[in-house]
Amino acid sequence: MGQGRQEPDDPTVTDPDHYRVVFENDRIRVLEYEDQPGTRTHPHHHPDSVMYTLSGFERRISSGDRVMDVVLEAGETRWLPEQVHVGENTGTTATHAVFVELKEAAPDHPARGEHGGGRLGATS
Image 1 (cartoon, rainbow, N blue to C red):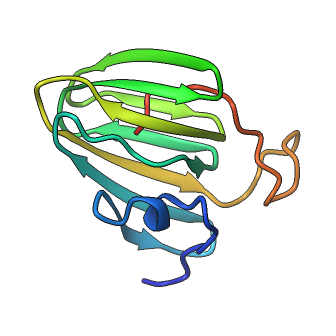
Image 2 (image 1 turned 120 degrees about the horizontal axis):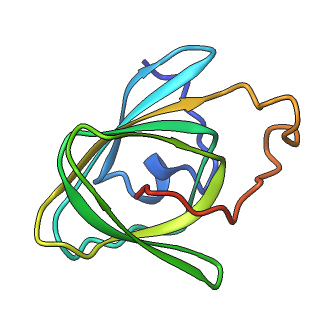
């Protein structure tokens, strides 16, 4: 399904071994993410998204000088505002999650391409 954005900070470009597009249309893109303990992603961007955890895991999320440690159980669903970050699997279990990325910016968000970045959330 290949309408994917190919911007340099797209997670499927920065970390293609961990992110894959499982569905895409003109309104959403669905990504599957998998990694192992110790995996660290490169800086990447996510638009507003919904994350569903398929496994329980521990992560450290870094955005600029802000760092947040998160512990998530399998079956959790989280809203994630647009952000640029790096994620690291700091636990002893693999990470497996699905992200539903929205392509339409919220009415109060800047136009596409201008990242609101910097917000931390429980993502990769």
